[in-house]
Structures are given as structure tokens and as C-alpha cells.
Length: 524
Image (cartoon, rainbow, N blue to C red; front, side, top):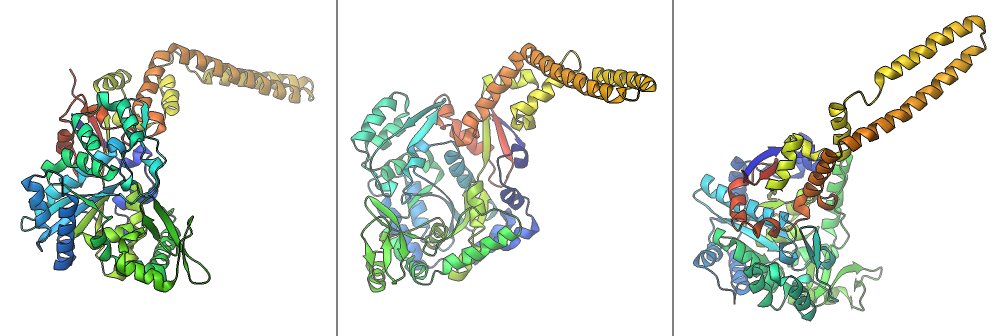
């Protein structure tokens, strides 16, 4: 593939807050630590205090999580390296999408691995480990229970509930799997057919795709890791400090005219166990209730629960980033545009708990054009930036440029107006009352001519029907169902015909280039 790029702003896909962030607008500097220039990683490295105990807890947790999975010496070395004071991580996170879900899941991980490689070159005295954070605790299964390929949606329906990482690959999944097994690559078959639950399958397929690049996969749903987070759990439950801080930061962003991405609650924790993940709320009597259940805890009882079973507390979107940074020696987080934006609401919480705020990088954004669609684009003479223009706007411009005559009938309208004006002047010299009649007639005639321009335009559309249809086909390809390709299509759309697809992405992506990439398959 070859690549070109456009300014993200021209795509119409990003919020103003995101665009202003990547443009380094000065008014946003209080909302983050340092901007992700390669030189700015030096103060991040020096400022990232991550003690020996936390490193040991993390390494042992990963050894348990990888137990039973055949791993290479590279993976083992990556895990062991986390015990060393000169090792740091760069991280991305995502839900447990079925069969990777939309393509940007792959883009996130490729961007993260490439950043680690770039940092190794810039700072050879340190070691950098790319990390994929599995959102095993997420309970919104409707967001991940399907994938789309070549315009068709494949969906797993199950009555299971609670954290999706614990979902069993039961008979309902086996029935679903049977319907799609005929086109799946072998590594997907191995991952899902030899796993009991969803988190195991996701770890296996991500491991297969990226182990050779040194990626580590972290599951935050771990009792030893949650124990490192216990102080935050207490402060969120009892003093609601994160709520107040995020609320204040959000208000400051809103004063600048930006919209909020997330909304903090007084308590930003869920109670979690197998089959259950529900919000915790404090009632007027001081008890802690688990919504949609009969579970109620006194202050003493919930303090005891934190002490003995911190894994039962699951952070929501407000606290999850802080949890991640408390258990990883992390320097950078790579996410989508919505993720980057909501992290900007969180910096005061990090400051309060004495945790360094990581630098925020948008993952690479890309659109892939196959040979067939490139031919259609070439026939229409579309430039890269014109691919993001609406079909309707393009059509108006195209018809004006290619019509055999002026579709607006501009000259005819001027002539008609002149005829009525001149005739009216002559008539008024005979009878003043004719002035209104001629003006009314001029309006009626102008409306008739305007109606005719619509008919002329429709006729020209019919004459150009082939070109207009081709432009619509291009639109449907790059924005299937009205959403960007990377947010809809599964990577198998390109991988099944080119198993070097991901390797090519590594060559084409630059994690410090925040432009929107257009990747074109080679064709003769």
C-alpha cells in the first residue's frame, strides 16, 4: 500500500476540542501534562515514579494471566523487564470485541507498538513495553457482541450478564461460531474453540497477532492489582473527591466553549462479581446500595470489603484511567478522539493522588482504498480531500462544472427580468395602476423559470447518472452505513486477501503523525 494524508479537520469526523488539542491550542495547556513530542518523553521518564513493590505485583500478575498460554522468550522477557526501574510502558485499551470488531482496534495496537519502537530509538538507555489493556470489566455487551464484514453483521446473542470478560463461550456462542467458521482464519478458530470465556479468547487472538512485536496484554480484573487501588476506592466512596475534581475541571472546559465527554458521579465505582456489575450509590442514611440488587453495606461493612476483596470494586470511566496508571509504569496513553478528549477532564484527580498524568496520543486514523474503488475515484478525478465532501455538495458542484449549459438559467433570468422591467416602464407611462400588475407578473414568471431550472437540473442528473452512481458507491465504501470505514469494517476485509496487511500497517503508521491517512492498495 501507499499512503497520503489529509488534515483531520477536513474529514468532519472530530470534535473541536480534539482538533484544538492536536493543534496545541494554548488555552488547553492546563488540562494535560505534556504534548506528545518525542523530546517531551524525557521529563515523563524522569518524573514517573513507580516503586519496586508495584513492579513486582504487576509482573507476578502478568505471569498468572499468561499461565497456560504458550509464550515466546520475548514475551517472558517483556514481563520480567517490568521489574526493572528503567522499563516503562505505553498503553492503549479497548473492549473485548468479537473477532477484533472494527478496524480501529487493530490501528490502536499498531500505533502503540510503533510508539514503543520509536521511543527505544530515541532513548536507548530505557526499555519501553507496549501494552493492550483488556476492558474485561465492561458490562455493555451490546457494544461488542457483533462484527461487520463486507456489509454483513455477524452477532452473538446470549442472556449472560455482568463483566463481559467472564462471559462463557457456551452453546449459544458455539452455534454462532458454526455459522461463520468457514471464513475465519485458523488463529481465530484456535482462540475461541480452546477457551472457556471471552477474555481468554481475546487474549489468545491478540497474542497471536502481536506477540512477535513484544505486546503485553493486561487484565485489570485482578485482586492483587486492585489492592494497589484501594486508597482511591476509599476516597471515592467516602469523600467523593474524584467527583468534585472532575466536575470542576469539566466546568473549566465548558467555560472555553467545549462539550463534556464524560460526567462524573459522586461514586464512580461498580460492585462486581460473576454475572453482576452494578453501580454503587450512597443513600441518605449513609448506607451503600448496589443498584438493581438487594445488596446493602454499612460503612464498616464496605470498609471491610475493600480490605479483603478489593477486586469486587470496578472503576467507571472516570476512575479507570487512574487505576491503569497506578498499576503500570506508564508514560503515554493512545486512544480514539473521544478517549483523548475525556482524559482532559481527569488531570486534577491524578494530581491529587500523586500520579503522573501520561501524555495523550490519538491513535492513527486511516481509510483504505482497494483497487476497484481507486479506479472509480480516478474516473471522477477526485482529490483526497474531496473524498470527505458530502455526495450532495459534490453533485451540485459536478453538475455545474459538467453541464452542457448554465443549469441555473442565469442569463435567461436576467433577460426575463429586463423584459418585465422595460415593459412595465412603458405601461406605467400610460396608466400608473399597471405598475403592480407588471411586478406581479414578473414574480410569477420568475417562479415558473425557477421551477424549470429544477427540471433542467434533474435532466442533467439523469444524463450524468453513471458518474453520480459511482460517487455514491465511493461514499458507501468509505462511509459504510454513514460511519467511517475504520469504525465499521472488520480487519478481515483486507487480511483474508493479504496476510501481510498488519505488517504493512506497521510500516505506514507513525504514532506521532496526527494526520488522517489514506492507504491505497497497489494496482496496475
